[in-house]
Length: 79
Image (cartoon, rainbow, N blue to C red):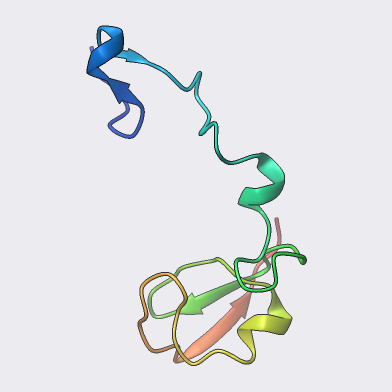
């Protein structure tokens, strides 16, 4: 029996407590730029491959907001 490490609850007998979703994050939040918190995520940073920003915010960043790696280039993504 495998457990999702992020949702494992020893208090609840090892049951997955989230029902498959992170209760603190909605689908809209998961697809929203972490910088402006307004636009949808549509850019991936290279070489780290994190995707957390919109095109407008990504153009002004030099470091990835997630891992702080230097951004060498960006690529548009389509969801």
